[in-house]
Amino acid sequence: MSTLFVNNLDTASGTDITVASGKTIKAPGMIVQVQSAETSVQLTLNSSTSTQTDVGLAVSITPKYSNSKIYVIATGNAYAASNSDNPLHRIVRTVSGTATSIAATDYIAYRGGGGGGTGTAYVQSVMDSAQSTSAHEYKVQIRSDTGSGTVYFNVRDAAGGTSEEAQLSTIMAMEIAQ
Image (tube, rainbow, N blue to C red):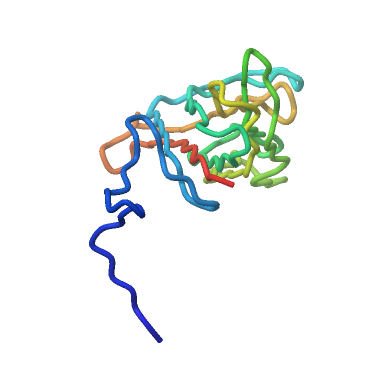
């Protein structure tokens, strides 16, 4: 087994290899860039079955390469006030004004019967393909499964949240070279 140590790379003429300003070195599987956002604001929603609502968690990334993959991961928590309801989530990509659902959940948590509501941690990820080198916005949306229940995203405790219980939801987009 051998190990190669290199202090400098030179061209055939003996000059250093440098990357021009604004240029990058690209290798398949390499993370080109990472963008992230977060929110600690609670969303309370009474919605119809067909209405998805932005939760206030979005990130924008402008791919350097049109053939890149974009890995998106979102975290948070959700709660439905009724045990017969469920908070349904999705990740939406918007490029050049066109919005497309790229990852959707059915039932992250489901609890029927008894009293009380349904709560769960929310973690969702998706590997997307860059649509172009235009800005890509990724955002989380939520709706009530029953269409008449109250659902929450980034729910705080009944006392309004303390430093230990305050919630922080996050979304991250990573461009991966191909």
